[in-house]
Image (tube, rainbow, N blue to C red):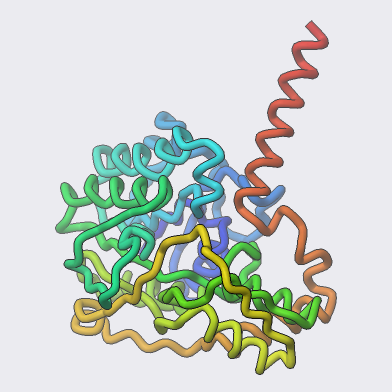
Length: 322
């Protein structure tokens, strides 16, 4: 089997590519290295942007069995920096994929498409996206309806855990970092629910889904939990203080995900708990494996903002030399 992971150098992609290699799947990566300065994994690598239609079309012609599409500007803050760019990458590029690729597609969507909902949402629930990020993912899903017999859409809960391309703008990872470094976790609000899923379990599911193909739209989360409860659990396992701050938080997302369709078709099992990954994050930080866990490189919006500034500075210097 030959698989192309588009966005394979990202947070989930970095874990997934290693798992595919370990499963003896022939895997290649297409990525523009937005968050990394290099990609040194021993797999075929194509440096490219998903908006480069000529290069993407040429890559898609290489007889892959499955395309795993992870490429996206991820997160509300990151998308808000440049909404038109976010739509082009998160939605329009998916439309191009559907029009120019006739094979199997696994598409990474998000639980954020559900927005705010008092009930446990199943896959047939009405979507209520509350941000550009969620809207762009919901729009991409519509394009994939045209490829419904060959598309697997996965609505992931909020990911957490260790990855070669680490992120510290995800709730469990942020709390774990603060508990490890500051010995204190601050939770603002905290009554809102989130569906949560370890990045390791997400990658395990994708590898299994490649071999047991069931096209359709599926929710995927390890558990639903209140943010305040997550903070309390991490504080306990890492011997940290917990500060619950009453506030009108800006993030209005509040939802729990059910997995009726997922359980019927795939019967997934999840093994990486919040506590286990919190410990792993703390060990990596305290052991010096993550030198500066507060660096902007680990926060999508800040990393993109920095890249935009660098690009602007390059243009200014070129203009000065004219």
